[in-house]
Image 1: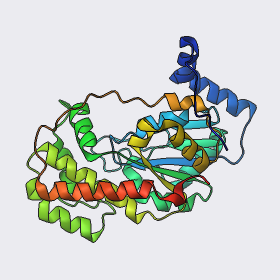
Image 2 (image 1 turned 135 degrees about the vertical axis):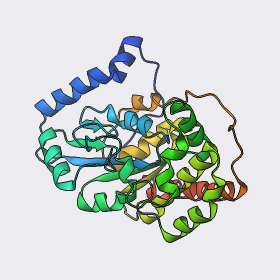
Image 3 (image 1 turned 30 degrees about the vertical axis):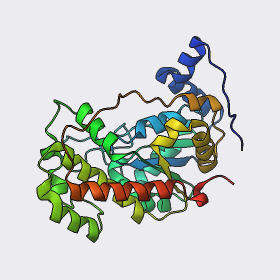
Length: 291
């Protein structure tokens, strides 16, 4: 499988056609109508929120053979009030199977971020499925949380379930003893939203190291930005689809460099640095790269 290493500038009309959400929905429906699949397969996107999961979804979701669904999009997610602990959780596997067969597209892409702790479980349940776990540097994720949710809600109550280790909530579900102990020891340090989101990033990404499955690929957000063509080649190989080389033009870094509003406590900062090194090592593992 090969992906071109260079792409000429596209005319504006062609760029709009390629990137238009409505047009791509139409292309997907036409492809399913003309090339119906009786046995679709799944591609899952996992990871911590604000880590580039939507960008990754767009990176590959423009393919007309892929019917993509974002986090919380019906009908693959519970449609319940925010107060319900199932909010944004993916529906049961038997329902996923029924919905996927009804789509008629060869591939269905869904983004169950609140079920990232179940990544290996979902991949085992759907034997032909593929998983992508994307991670991003903790400073960028913290800033993205603070900017995106500014004025919408107070982050400390939002992270209460994690800090209080409420394992009935997705925020604390599936964490190992080491991470649970770490939260107990350091939650008193999370007096600012910056520190709380750092701990959230640490907890969510720690889940990856307990999701041992050969069909789960670790993706570095920085690679999508800095090496989009190589990233596209790697993704094409993993999900077993020929992705248009023009898709490599889509990832864009829109934010400007910012400083964190508060200092991350040293104990949490050291753990985040160590975790980021582990994640980078995981994403550069030769066993994950195309032959």
